[in-house]
Image (tube, rainbow, N blue to C red):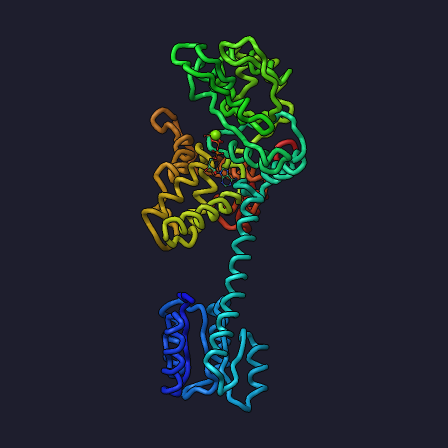
Length: 463
Ligand SMILES: Nc1ncnc2c1ncn2[C@@H]1O[C@H](COP(=O)(O)OP(=O)(O)OP(=O)(O)O)[C@@H](O)[C@H]1O
Ligand SMILES: [Mg+2]
């Protein structure tokens, strides 16, 4: 049997320790031996062990005490206690206090190996179980991480729509998770066993897009040497995800409208209609109503698509979700890149809340990936942020800079007061009058903020 587990063996009787060590090593384990509590503690600080085997009576202390220490520093490590012949109570105590198993001296070495094997097996099972649970949990959100109202509502809607075939129109800024949401809808629905076929309607020239979507017959155009099915046909029984639908040409909009109305279409160069059973999810970062106004998007198509409109909030409106998502990416990139960025500093948190995130979740993802790659370990600090993330405050200040040259006179105190009121009010509005968050955002304490609100007589609009 091939073993690769690391074992810490604590036993003061040198001969006995060497015998055990040899037996364990020939079974394939990596063994570190320690003759006393001090050496055992040293060994624990050096690296991680899968298992420790502890004698109870040690020259400079007690194995049970040591076990309690080890339990605290590494709850996952397996622990076996070796007790003397007459120490049945000690053994029971040991198990009650957290040992996984005990061996009564004298014991048979094969017996020890069997016990270790069993212990390793249950530990592995537990580990598998945990990672399975994590995977399932990960899948549950399918990347749509978040607790804020906007995301919660979407998560609930996904569940509600699980057995619906209704057409969905997702809108949201670039990088806000439109594709993630589309996948979540598909995966949680009754069509999840069938394919979800995606196509970006913005990236492909009209002619090509038409044959990509609807397929073509042999000889339909130069180069069409054989017939080819389109994405609608490939997606039959499943879902088609039409990304950047707002970029589709008027001609294709007509053709798509017919698919939505009748679930049928003709491939390029063909007179014969093909019938399909496809659920349509479309997405756009454009404001389709404005596109309709401008005559670029068909109103009838819009109503066909907009059966269930889902709106992804921009990241800057998701409050603390920023940290949740940042954590998610920290975990992911730390393990992908074997880096160890343990978190973000309070200053970074404040900057993150204040930043407007034009690239939304994708921008946050890129930031974390960059920091894990370049910094590798420690806590993320302000200096790790790109300068555009720091300039927000400067920009606000700039917009309030008075033209000193052209003013006839300036009342400094009144102007500063006014500026202060404006900043406080804006911060309160931004966080829905949540004073904790506004205070945090303004880097002041809550009590001071409350005092200022009172003194300045600030109130929510409309109250
Ligand atoms: N709520 C979320 N939690 C975790 N990761 C997310 C979340 N939303 C988006 N992501 C991640 O952010 C990235 C961008 O998401 P996605 O591609 O779905 O955005 P999009 O709105 O389709 O962007 P675009 O407009 O550029 O096409 C992806 O890597 C995705 O996994
Ligand atoms: Mg997208």
